[in-house]
Image (cartoon, rainbow, N blue to C red; front, side):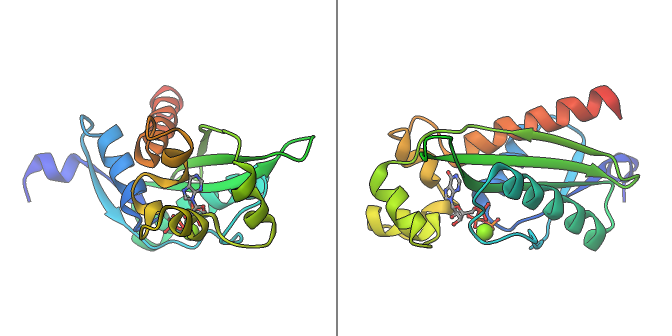
Length: 177
Ligand SMILES: O=P(O)(O)OP(=O)(O)OP(=O)(O)OC[C@H]1O[C@@H](n2cnc3c(O)ncnc32)[C@H](O)[C@@H]1O
Ligand SMILES: [Mg+2]
C-alpha cells in the first residue's frame, strides 16, 4: 500500500442507502479519507417520531459503524419526523460523527412541514419511505430524492440535504478534534 493510502483516515458510514453514502462522499471529496459502508443498526424505530429519537438513531449508527469496521471515524445519518406544538409533523434529519476516542459531533438538517395527506398516513403507522413510493408511484424514492425532494418540488434532494449535515459535522470535527 502506498504511504498516501496508509495516511488516509478510514471513515465508516452507517448505512448502505446510496442517498446517504453519496452525501458523505460528495461532502468530503476533497479530504484525504477512505470510506467503508456498514449496515449499522439505528437502535430506534424504523420511522423515528421525534427529534430526540432521530438524533439517537444517528449517534447509534455512527458508533455501531465505527465499532464494527474498527475505523478512525464513524458517521450516522438518520431521517425522521417530529411534531410541533400545534400537532403539525415536520421532517427532521440528524447526523453524528464519532471518533475512536468516543468524541461525538452532532448536527441537524432541514426541517419542513409534512403535507396533511402524508401526515395522516404517518400517524396510521406507515413508514415515510413507503408512503412516498405509493404517492409517487415510484420505487425506493428514499434512495434518491427522498421525501425532502418531493416536498421541495425537487429543489433539494435527500443527498444534498444530508451533504449539508455532513459538512457541519466535519467542520466541527476539524475545529475541535
Ligand atoms: O437504509 P437506511 O439508512 O435506514 O435508509 P432509510 O431510507 O430507511 O432512512 P432512515 O431510516 O434514516 O429514514 C427513516 C424513514 O424516513 C423515510 N424518508 C424518506 N425520505 C426522507 C426524508 O427526506 N427525510 C426524512 N425521512 C425520509 C425513509 O425512507 C424511512 O422510511
Ligand atoms: Mg431506515
